[in-house]
Length: 318
Ligand code: TXA
Ligand code: MG
Image 1: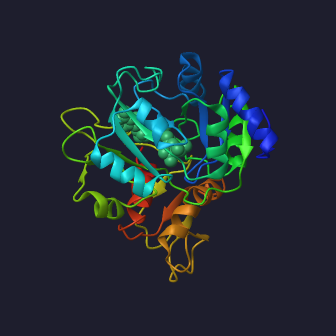
Image 2 (image 1 turned 90 degrees about the vertical axis):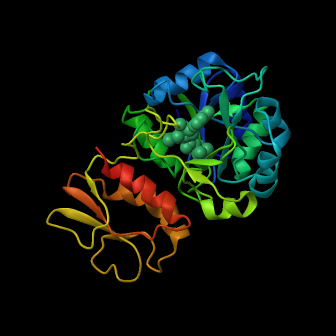
């Protein structure tokens, strides 16, 4: 495993590794992904094994164009409208899997739907085009842990043995601009349903689609999105949310201009985009044995704040 800068030569080498069934970590606008050939059962199985991910939690399939996506899933008018408006971008659409979709059944955990997205990152797009097959890519962290927003974060997981050694290459594209994962929207039913708040706010999607329902973690006895596990994105230390101040031994993660006692501030000006971009790196930076816990100040719940609060709530659940 090595971190390499994302030169054209290294992107070509990464694409060759992917086609050979190996795993390659690569930057997207949201977080770093751990990619594997989505049509190769063994590559997909090794993604689950490397992350320690439960096999019932399906993967997002990354493609470079809408045409490619339309070979894997059935697009309806709503999906076409959103794709035209938002892709490439931090939106994942869950759509009915096409009957002869070449994607490994393991990748979609046996569901008859499939999650697809076109990432808005030049390196990711170049890698996908060069690979020529759909790429399954969860966030490149051990299951349940904080997602990586730099190549170094990924390397630390590999070096510490939390990600098994079969990551063949880490393509370095610098820090991710959005910083929280894509918004996951289920369009398999009559009512569009938000499965995961993420890098594109629900309010923005509603401008194109009208009202969007929000899935609750447990619906009809089972998680609607298998990824809606309660505990997730967890640092090693306990996380306390909606904190006005830190108690003894806690590190305070602040937000906004009033956070004078904060050790780090997600956004001194109170900008939610900046806060999302800083969230995971700052949680990692404060996750040190010198502290007993991480206290996080309240974050407004609109726009990108919904995704930030979702991640923080789950980081605080154990
Ligand atoms: O921003 C992102 O989406 C990043 C980058 C790498 O693209 N990827 C990512 O993947 O966050 P992952 O595996 O960490 O999260 C995928 C989410 C999970 O919550 C999973 O349950 C959900 O998408 N998902 C995938 N396929 C699904 C399906 N067919 N139906 C419902 N939910 C699905
Ligand atoms: Mg993840």
